Structures are given as structure tokens and as C-alpha cells.
Image (cartoon, rainbow, N blue to C red):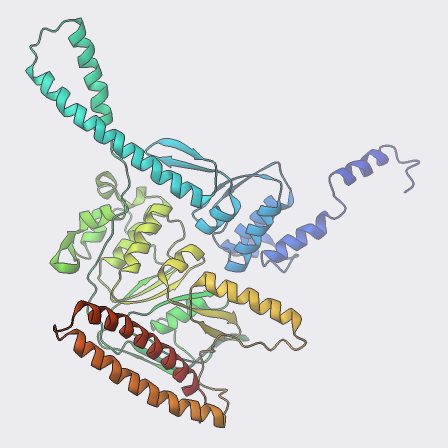
Length: 516
């Protein structure tokens, strides 16, 4: 390039090379595209809150700083974006300081963790899994030290009470040591992760049935011939990119939005509890405890136990001081916790949770996860928190967009592994029409082949025989007359029979979906 007559141009070109400025615009467009910002000429003032956060994240990544500071970067990112960001940061040479409650993100990206606990900092040189292991060791060591100090404290307290007021130099030294010991003995580890076994209202065998639901907004399809029968105690997760209609789907099921056509039949015993993304509305002048007591003074637990509103709030990490402060003083995370408490205090038997993990700390997430794992009712949860989904759901509804909804029989990690296999196969096959997860629709059924008809009839007979065999074994096991050796043999055999019934029933159900 000619630089004569342009003083300083050569230095500028060298600087452009050094700063990699020639491909800066292209790189900016690539990162924005990965974060689902497609209209590069759109004005910032027209962007939604989630889009603004993603543009800010893209701006931070594009500059390639020496130190990148991120505060909850995965909020407002869908699962594909989160996984892309994980891989981007893992490959990047940038030093990263990040606040996040996304535990898979912590595990896969971070090589060191700083924990703030009881106004102290603790440093761990490893990922989230390593941190959990070492934190538990720290808690056990702390508990042992406090227990040892307590034993010594009781001995010293007895000595202090026996001594006269006038003490010599050695006694005063021992007295000073006693007060130091007292500080250690009275320390408490704030580890309030308490298991809640809340008694849900009885839920009957009929939950609800959705039949041939259709919903679209102009050209955007949300549901297309969607049919589903909910089972008792079912725990369903919903995943999909932003804008595929997950929140709208929930509102249709709850009757807040009307479907274009179709029918929903809800069982008489169903009692919904709905946690929505826009439900954080409280009277700012009320005290935290009053908000919950307005719903119920006590909540019923299993085995006839009860918890007061005060105790229930403590389980969700509201200190007595916070409970008696005004809602106006709560942080964003505390407001979400309070909102969660108001939903759970109503003892629902069907929980619908739309992004419940946003702005919740890890300790609160553990409390919520344990609550949901023991929850005796139905659950639908929409969440971008993969760790949370893996712990609480039995299967997924995957929203692919355009009304295409698939039922996947497993958690998110299993779904992700299946999806990777499908992607590999898609690259190998000339015509990428691989078998997908079962589509949640009643149309598009093919005819059953002769071989499948024979198999279907044989399965019916085999299942009936196995059920009879199972009933016979159960009768023997309950007779009380068996020798221990025969008891062990039959106990093992009934497990095998139940496994065969489950296996053959699943195949029978698959075939029953095909038209005869």
C-alpha cells in the first residue's frame, strides 16, 4: 500500500494489524449472530431488555480485554447461546472474573472459585465439582473445631463460675483465653439447606387433557395440533430457544391466554401454583412476614407436622431481621425468593414454574430442588438452568419453533447427548431425515405392518401373563410362610418380572400409536 504523502499512515496500518482491526466488523457480526441479534442496523432504543443485555455481552467479548468481568452472563440466554458462550470462554485466553449461579457453566469454564460465606472469603483452586468437595471438607473441619471448643468452653465456664472475683495474673490470663474460646464456641455455620417435605393437596387420577390445540400470532406458530394427557406426579421440563412460545404455552394451559382452537379438560382436584416471569408485584409498604401470613399462618408438612410462616421463610433463607423489614428494601434475588414462598405457601398440587432460577443463589436453588424432588404433585418447569432441570424433571418437551414440539424421555443432559448423535448422523446421511423424539401430536400416523400387528397381539398376551405371574409372586411374598432362601429368590425374580412388564409395555405403547 502506498504511504507517500500520507505521514503517519504506515504507523496506523501497523497498529491496525496489531489490533486485528481489519476483521473487527466481521467478528462483531459473528458474535452478534451467535447471540441471536440478526438485524445489525436496528436502533438500540428498539431492543428488548434481553436483547440489550446480549448486545452488552457481545460488546464485552469483541474487545478481547486482558480481564473480562461478567455478572450473571447466562441470564437472558437460551440453552444454545449458553453452550456457545461456554465454548467461547473455554477457548479464550482472557482472564475471567465472573459472578454466576449456573453450576454447569462454573464446572466447565472456571478454574478457580471464590466463595463469600459469613462475611469471609474462601478460595478454591478448581471447578465447581472440586469446590463442592472442598467446601464440604471445610464445613466438617469447622464443625469439629466448634464442637471441640464447645467441650472446652463448658469446662472453662464451670471454672469461671467457681472462682472468686479477685484473681491473680495467671487467672486473669485464663479468663482472657476463656472469652476468646467463647467466640469460637458460639460460631454458627450458615448452612440452611433444610429438606422440606410439604404436604400437597390430594390430586386425583384425572389431571388435565389437552386436545388438538392450535395457536399462532400472525405468521408465528406456537401450537399446531398439540395433544397431551398429563399423568399423576409427572415432572415435565420445557426447553427451547427464546421466542418459540414456551411462556405462551404455559399461559394457554392455565387459561390466561386462549388457544385459537382445541380443548383443555382440567381435573376437579387440580390446584395450580404459578410462578411467572412477570409476577413480582408486592405492596412495597408491607413487611415480608405479613406478605406470607396474608396467604397462610401455617403450612402443612407430611406426617401431621406444620410450619409457621416465620419458619417457612427461614427455610428459604430469610433471617428474622429481613422478615420484619419492608418489601421495598429487598434485593432482586430476595424478591424472587419471597415470590416463590407466596406460591408454595398455598400448598398447590400442580406447580407451573416459568424461569424460577433467575437471580436465585446456589443455596436457595438447592432448597428449591430438594422441595421439588419430594413434591407430591405435578410439575411443569421452564428453565435455562441445565443443572436444575437435570435434578428435578423426568422428561422434556422440546420447542423447536413453528409449532414443532417433541417429547423427549429423559433429562437435559441425556437430551443433549442424543442431539449430538443426531447431528453427527445428519452430516453422514445424504437425506437428513433421522428418527426424532416422538412428536406430541395425534396426526401423521402411518399404518401398522403385518409383522408389527403380530408383535402387538403377542405383547398383549405376554403382558397379561407377566401381570398374572407378578400377582402370584406377590401373594407368596405376603404369605409369611416362606423360608429366607425362597424369599430372596422370589424377591429377585419379581424385580425381573416388573422390568419385563415395563419393557414390553413401552413397546406396546409405541405400537399402539401406529394405526392398525
